[in-house]
Image (tube, rainbow, N blue to C red):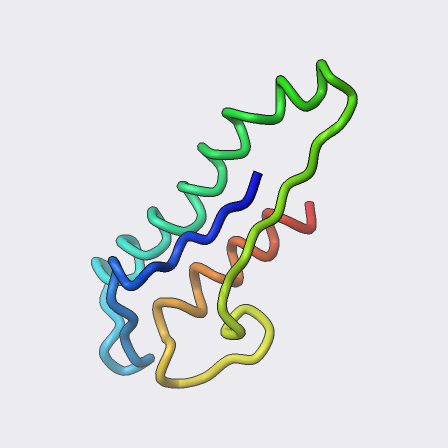
Length: 84
């Protein structure tokens, strides 16, 4: 399964412009979307004994930037989910 959550459908905001609403909106799109997608395919992968998950994100998960305030929150959450 390949999951690329950020297609521009949820605007990014700078750190100073990030609100709870903008953070929650992108978090739901990125992190909750990844969780729901993985839960759909993992049982079948486990049963078959094979499969792969590929999650893509932007660099804000590893290299914070003030212009990606809400995106950094979500992408860091996605990165942590993937690693665990």
